[in-house]
Image (cartoon, rainbow, N blue to C red; front, side, top):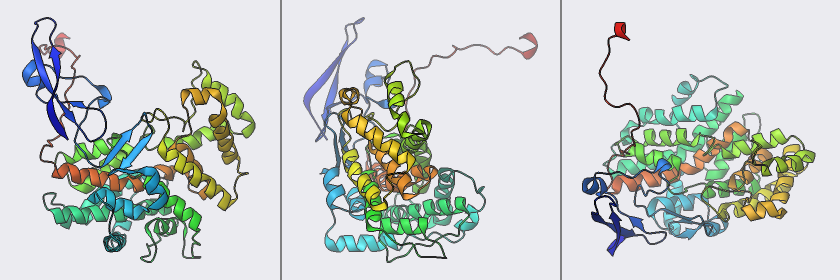
Amino acid sequence: MSSNEKSFTLTDNSSGKSWELPVMHGTLGPDVIDVRKLYADTGCFTYDPGFTSTGSCESKITFIDGDEGVLLYRGYPIEQLAEKSDFMEVCYLLLYGNLPSAADKVKFEHDITYHTMVHEQMQTFLRGFRRDAHPMAVMCGMVGALSAFYHDSLDISNPKHRMVSSYRMIAKMPTIAALAYKYNLGQPYTYPKNKLRYAENFLHMMFSNPCEEYEMDPVLARAMDVILILHADHEQNASTSTVRLAGSSGANPFACIAAGVASLWGPAHGGANEAVLNMLEEIGDKKNVGKFVEKAKNKDDPFRLMGFGHRVYKNFDPRSRVMRTQCHKVLDALGVHDEPLLEIALELEKIALEDPYFIEKKLYPNVDFYSGIIFKAMGIPTTMFTALFAVARTVGWIAQWNEMIEDPSQKIGRPRQLFTGAEKRDYVDIKKR
């Protein structure tokens, strides 16, 4: 970030007074007008519901250009990382800013692997939930409870404590997600295996049981690894901003990540791929696709196609192209093209890529559309979709939280408001009302 002679002039039309606002420059992206002294100088706040025009922090982690369809992790294009890297290497990159050496990667993978087990008493805590509880409800509680089981690494001013907590969160999130899944099914908890890689271990904990060993399909393991890479971070989205806001108060990292999990649970954020499957179920049959597409084109019809287009990416989502490739690899490996919901999804994909309406409106199938199809094909229930998203996004949350803690310019989050309620009034005794 830098600032030079360029500035933005703000003029009050009624008084004629003017103020010079500094303009800040990042390495990529639009310039930013510094309004930190705006209230002190003018007596006014800015009004920006949703903070869509407000930069809340300075960051070196992730960059998005929605108009050009660009997503960079620490400067590396997401397409290159998804093709050539693996999730553990991407985790190291997000945490430390650079790709690891061969030796660094071996040590990092070892350290993460040997933190994958959770305290045995957490199973007792787990049994306090109803069996039919949503996995995200269970994860919110269990992630927050980690601070009660691992209180030896909660000093956020201590770099070693922050590192240990970071590793614990990345390592234990798949274990917690698998615990929530197994508990919901009524199956015994499957312990992680140190000989397996991260994505493999997650699939093993999800699908193995004491009666038979889970046979690892390399296509599915690679698809899961790529899904984790694609969802690892996404700049200052709702859940990441929630983690940063919680962390700005000095809250411990487990509490901050639990807040991120809660934010991610929302259907407008992490629940989008679950909404895709619900939409496919509403369509019901491949022969109904055309009718529902016409309903989606009708502005007066409340039906909306889920999994198409993106709020940030106005041209195309670079992750969706990678995910599309993985989706078709998984479908080919499993041979499940004739499954009714997947038939509907593939027909929708065909229309979206060929129909002039979709092309003109840039309503391409997005990453949530393809990830929902992949999860369905792999036998993962829709209630677990957002939980898998949380597993992937944990490293991004942790990297953003660490960056915030180390940033001397950060203060406790305190947004202002435009108050439109009642003016000051005197209390009236209840007998006189």
